[in-house]
Every structure is written in structure tokens, then in C-alpha cells.
Length: 355
Image (cartoon, rainbow, N blue to C red; front, side, top):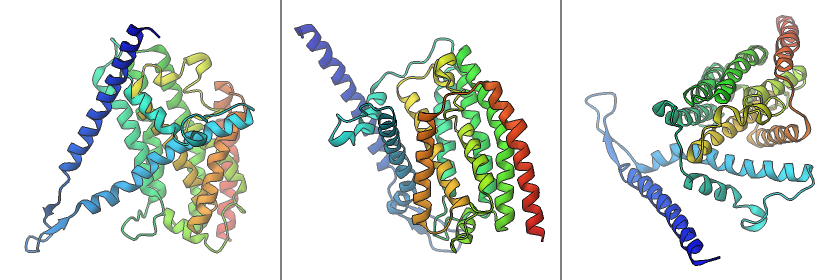
């Protein structure tokens, strides 16, 4: 390597280091603003209560845990795919590639965030943040044992969150002003609307069996090892297909079809914007795995964690095993097969519950 190449490489590394130091400085600067403050209670005559930094940290910990889980889930995916395809996976960074997610995150955040000339700048920058916020909102529905975090109509809220998640994809595809991005966004909207109908029937069956709308209560209802998997095994198969379509995973990844759309709705995104969209997508996958375990294999937290891991691995094995379908076949599968199957199962559940 000659002298000029060494100088240019040093400048690039220095630029990346400066960017990371700026990010760390902004983070700690914002953290310094979170000093203890006095907040008045509802009554004007009551004493002010102190909101400490510890309570803020405790409220943020679940979301930080989700971000770490997403990073290591990507590592698990690459490991599983490498085993199935008989090749080497990530194994260079640290021991057995354990720190590979941090390396990938650092690489993406150090890259330049390029805004296309004809894109709508404001919505283009806002779209990844919208996708991440919506995906993290769903994690508020995790069945915590604490009575302070309890959603009576958690099932309805989950359906609302999954419904509005397509708006981030739609925004990113439209404001990029690219034909490939727009086609990916249109596919996402049609796919999401179609597969939410059989998903709604599945929630109807589970709620009718449990008589409850809260994920905490649905999980507690199955603590006696009476899993909803046994009477609703057909609904579980339909649920897994719907979840694959809702999260844009193979073989239903037409929103990001590399063979015809060159990565689809996120084709114009780079650097940190692409990383945020990537995190939002994998966060939705893990949330769908958790909800699958709660609805069909609820009970204690150990069983929920085991079945969540099983569903998450199912996503990976499906990606490595099945080829991508044609888009018209995907829509026909929903409207002519899954919808009819769920209507039949719903009628059977109504009859059995009414007896």
C-alpha cells in the first residue's frame, strides 16, 4: 500500500471515528437533560413527587433489550443459513462471530446517508423513524407480570399496530420517487390488507375460546397446560402463513423482491436509514413470534420463551427452504384458500363454544 492510499484510509477511519464521537456526545448530552425533576400529582393540594432517572431507565430497558435481540437474531439467522447452505457464516469478529451485529451496526452508521435529488426530503428522512416507532409500540403488549403494564384490549391494539405498520413502508416507497420503491410500497399495501382479514378471524377464534382480550389473561388462561394449539392447530398453520406475509418474509417477500424490484421500498436508502428500517423489520418478526407463543402456547414465561424461539427459527428455516412464489399466487392463496379455511374454523369454534 503506497503513502497516498495509507493517508486516504487514515482519513476515512478518522471520519468514521468523528461521526461516532458526535453520536456519543449527542446521546450523553440528551441523557444529561434527564436529571430528576418535580412533577405535580393530579391533585393541586398534594405534595410534588420526584421522578428519578432510575424510573426513566427502567421504562427504556425493554426497548433497549429489543434492539439487542434484533442484533443477535440477525446473527442467528446468518448462522442457521450458513449451516443449511453448507458454508461458513460470520466467524471472524470476536469468538465465533459473536460481535458481528455490533460491527455491522457500526459500519452502517458510519456510512453516508444519501438523499436522492428528486426525493421529498422531509418524509424521506422521517419514514425510517416512523417504521421503528411503530414496530417498538407493539412491544408494549408483552405480557408483563406487573400490574402497572396491563392492556385490557391488547388484541385490538396489536391489530391496530400491525395495520398502521404499512404506512411507514408506503411513505418510504412513495417519497423516494423511484419506480422500484413505489411498486414495493403498492405490493406491501395490497399484501397487508389481504392477510389481515384471515388474521382477524384467528384473533376472533382465540378471543372466543378464552373469553378475554388481554394477552396477559390469555397467557394465564393456558397455565394449566391446556394450550390453544390443540383445538386450534389449523388456525396456527394459517397464522404462520399470515405472519410470514405481514412481515414480508420469504417465501412472501415480494415487497423486497431482489429479482425484480432491486430491494423494493428501501432501494434508495443507505447508511443509518437502511439500518433503522432493517431493525424495524426484524423487531416485527420477533414480536410476531412472541404473540404466536402467547396465543397458542401460553403459560409461564419459560414456555413462552421456548416457543418464541421455535417460531423465530421457523422464520429462518422457511427462508432457507422455500422459493419465492408469484405475486398473483400469493393473493389467490389468501382470498381463495386461507379465508375459506378460517371461515370454516370460526364457524366450528362458535358452535363448540355455544354448546
